Length: 397
Image 1 (cartoon, rainbow, N blue to C red):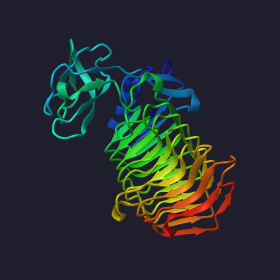
Image 2 (cartoon, rainbow, N blue to C red):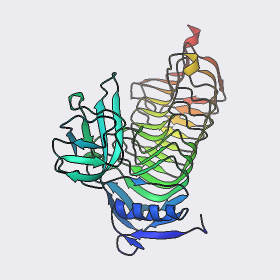
Image 3 (cartoon, rainbow, N blue to C red):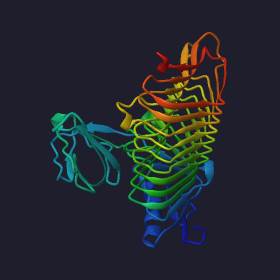
């Protein structure tokens, strides 16, 4: 995109001046209408009442740490009246804090089964406690099924787009002042049904959900990023995503560092620092096959360094993955923990050339645990130190 159209957004000196989502969205939409280009965000803090919706063939870049997009505090209230799937308006018990242009999320128990309905929309008109939305609901939100509306949204979002670059930005989810919204719907960055996405030198922090999440997205590259202190997942290559590349990132203080969702295939997680995540460093499971996890530093994971999840049968298990040349240290609590835990009916896993260590004394720590129903698990040239048990093979029983 070096020779394409470009323009700037700034608080005072940009071609578009402003300090919120409206100014940034105006720049993106202008470039998209002309076929794409680069939107440069000048230094400053930009406060968001709605997601920035990306378009195809757009490069959005900031000025490194000097450009920060922060989500404004959320508000939430119940619906006062039922709204059906064909409606495009909702009536609230209290509309304070809900204004035209704001992004919202509606959630309710579904009237038809035990699950939940969740959608995101934008407010386009308001009269008293009644709001009109940019699209119809497409699901039922009934007041007697705990229907709630909240000003929750991703910071950067894209759906059904391709050839996008996101660079040199700070994204702050303002976690203490926002409700929770999980990575199937939001994050500092959330992408859905996209292709050829590049994310480089972005700090995604403090989101009450995921740091960076992409669902059914192919050829996503995340490099040199920092995903810090998010409530859920640091990086979330989501269901069905093919060929993700995650290199040279720093993932720390999240509930979980890197989470391979369902059916993630032919991915590479390489040379990442994955530190002090509260549950797992890396989790891989449901039909996640043919991935490579190598040269990562995984330290101080709350429970397990790398876990192969316990799926209910062989067909849903994560097969043909390689774990090589990683440093995995101090997994679990002072009392116990596992460096690599291979569960379920997982097959054809190579664990090669890893250093798995424990520096704390007195605990019952395990280097590699091999589940009783696994098969074709190959361990080769790994080094173990400080552990109570280097390899615990439950198949021997």
